[in-house]
Image 1 (tube, one colour):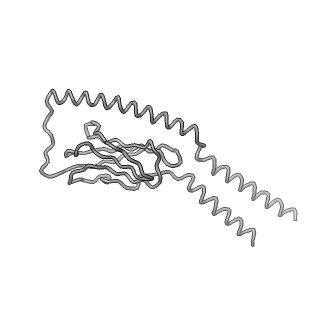
Image 2: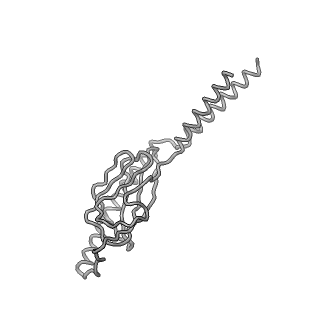
Image 3: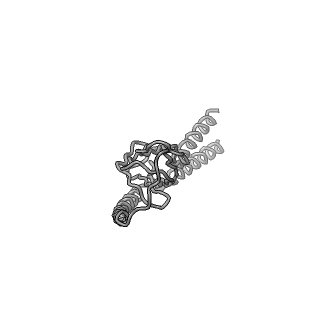
Length: 192
């Protein structure tokens, strides 16, 4: 009877550990929500994840034309990532692409979209040549800045990969050890 209790406790312990080891951090909620129609001025985007996320996690915002919208002051606090908008968003559809590093070191990405529809706000008219040229210059500068950010993130990810064991390794070792313990237990029991 005592042996059965020990085996049961061991299996429960292993199940709890292996479930945590295989778990990944997912987006729990966001503000604005996926598919939401925002009817008031939006100055901040918040993403709440189901687990802790690491520094180096980020998100980007773009409109339906693929133009990147600047995000300022992205802050990370445990499982919450917040970014402020430089300017209020105009009416239209927007896409948020997020890229995080979970507490287990795995990079995870995803996206969601929302629509801004503030009454009394008009969609901007076609830009003039000067405005279009300055927007192109700004887009080029942003692209160069994004490439630098991507290079830094890539280097951080490589360093993280080098310093961490694969997530399946620990549960595999635990399972093998339990099999050995069970085998030894039944081996000793047969000798009696």
